[in-house]
Length: 390
Image (cartoon, rainbow, N blue to C red; front, side):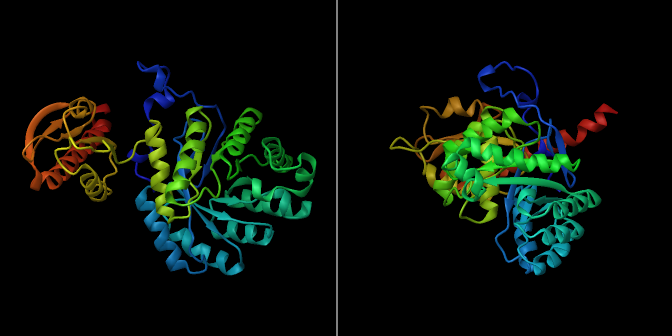
């Protein structure tokens, strides 16, 4: 289960205009569906998904990877089910997972039936690709009987032949038309527990397709720039594509597709949400790129702090700046701040106010202790709120 604090959406994202209107995001209205016990769409927090890359039939390896994704903050995890061995293992995987599991199905409708019976919370399948109307009916009935949602996943790399012939190439109109065709099939079977993705590896194409689809439907939208690339390049492409859509209020769940371990996808996804103030989980670090004025090694210090503070889930902020040019100003806006000084002696700020000094050799350990103490303080205050209400 995702922790309660990590599922908190930033108030400005849900509420009306704030005192800083340039930061407000007006979210696109959408229906809400349930993926297992996680709400998607409506006023639910934007969720972060990833996908395993283990051999699914190896249940132990897949469960271990899912556990790492859960620790990183994943709300939902997708698992590929290409064969019957995978759907047999899926039952054990679903039982062991703490988050809802989406079964990724391509073409073979029997895998969808098996996955639904195995306890998948959602089926990623395009109903138009699984053959006869009878097969579609079987899959929809299995989803209904097992409480499964369905995720329609249109991808520019696998558009239907007739749409490619009609439009000449993958384009926003072709992706949206494909999505609407699949939606129509589910609606004709009186099934509405679905969400939709229209992904492309081209950022412009993906963003334009999602913008058009957002105007055409009221279902939740699953955002992603598919096959985005490696950790650095893929992060940049995903941040631009997913971030621009979220900034426009479009999107209810996201998956950052990287040629990297799935837990890295989760971390990048949360950083995108944190940068827009949509979700807050863990420590948000504000740090400078460093220069000759730095009073300590900023780059190495931030690396150590990010590694040692990765276990913190409580939303809070930390500024790490090497000198007094911008350090005091940034520290005033964060829960904890450190600004470099001379002779290996640096100023620590608590709640935006200068508090005490710390020396080089003690700095990292000291900041870690301060962050852990602040996190415990925030958690205690949050826990006391229900008692105070009573």
